[in-house]
Length: 208
Image 1 (cartoon, rainbow, N blue to C red):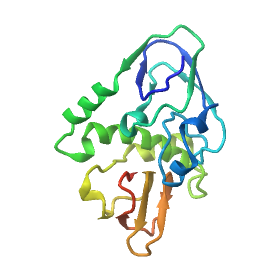
Image 2: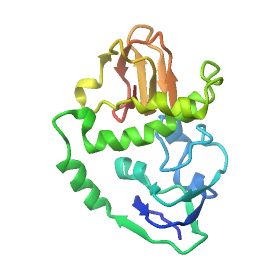
Image 3: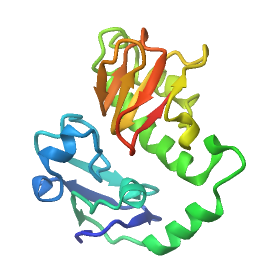
Image 4: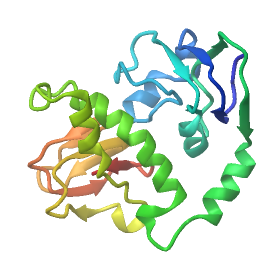
């Protein structure tokens, strides 16, 4: 079974799906990576997206979240290793849902919640490579990112980070240090010394 569109699929049985990024370069270009765009993938073992990955997904997994938000086609090939039951949610239905559930609080909109789900996986992968967090267990890293939020909206294009934001992970696009003018490209962990963020690319998203 191969998804070449941006589908959100929910597996609802005891199944195993083999996820393979063998045709990755066909769906995601080096130019997109240089601009900090996340490919439409589910596994973030290699955040440089430079080599083929393979993983196994079990029941309850959602496939294609990034594609819902960015419109990028799925960059993986899925092979069902057992009988499966899946729910397919069309892009049109997801677009209606994103519009309907914008929420009064931009941090609690459906879009923000989906980005947070993606961001927690990206952040966990990033923290595991940082010397400061390498002594941490996987569970401790997961607990650390559980308290995160993804701000959505134009008012966050330029902002001074609140004091409670101890870590900032850039998920999508590029941002600029408002003081040093250094540019950071996703996916990356923004240095703790950077407290003022400025817009570089319009599709910027970050989690703190």
